[in-house]
Image (cartoon, rainbow, N blue to C red; front, side, top):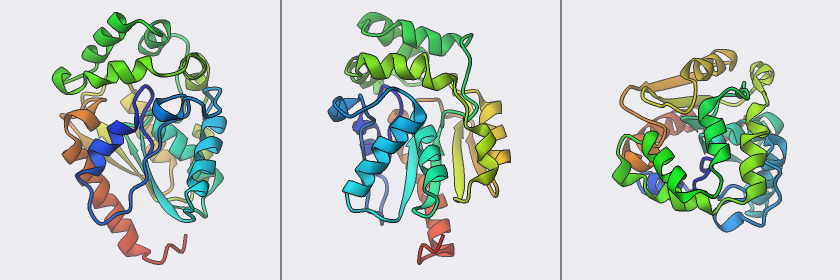
Length: 238
């Protein structure tokens, strides 16, 4: 499980509490939480390589990936680069594969707000549906290294891996929020159309911070997809 930009492993821990029947490994993203010393330039290939190395160091050879927001884009990069290891992929409100451009006001606003607790508190509240449950995001954002912060928001977020999606060989499901104001839903759905056999679950009442607001709902959708895929391929032959 890979958290989103600005979040710590606690985001995925909250979801994992509602999962059963799985061995769960949760990693902080490089430059985040307990991984502030991990190598990163904020670009997807570097982020994916660092996390893939961490997964291998944990002694895991075949696994399912659950990536949240930016974590979803990183999980996609890992699945594209290592399809024989990844059994299934779930993107939770995932960052769209086509990326964005410099005119994206939300992304530019976060980039400019580095280290500003007041502005970040207001920004988190603005993208929340239940602000009382998302307040921890400000402190985890303040812990992100400057290299990772600007490297992603002013660099990595502008790049695209959309043209590679038709080559993806991993069963994939996107869990989308109908009230997500961070990621472009049309672009997310375009990703799903490009992925062979790609699936999408659209939950109309979910926002971008649904993992903190309704972790049980998110966990239920993850379980439904992974259990279906694992029953279909119990030996992990992919």
